[in-house]
Length: 166
Image 1 (cartoon, helix red, strand yellow):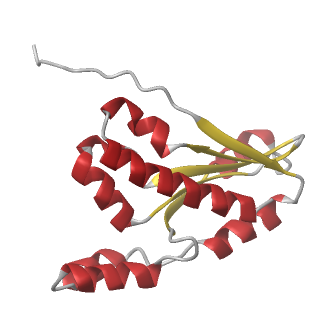
Image 2 (cartoon, helix red, strand yellow):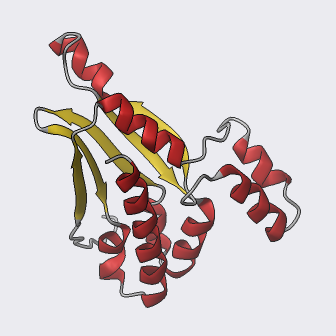
């Protein structure tokens, strides 16, 4: 039998609701993050000869507040296949910053399981919900003050981004 270790993680979900239309909320989020060509992005990282060059390359790819989109999943498209065209819109955005991830992973390697982070944008009868599982809560059980400091800063960036959509 393979020896296994388990860790219980209590997750805190930050969630806000906007009365704005889905497309307006999405446009605000899109305007707040960088959108590098993810087919070319790994090549840019590999081409950097020094950490400073890599940092400059990454900084050129992020938007305000220092985040970029890695990928998006249109969960709503799958829902609407069964519910019809009036089914809810729902997107899962994977966003982050490789430099922030690097700082967390230096202290807690498992942070690589959580970064980049997910923002869920979904349409419900009471408005458009924006949800995010805080990095601080995901890393709290590891007991690294250094990683938690970076996680809190990341959480603040994500919360600032979500506030743009309200």
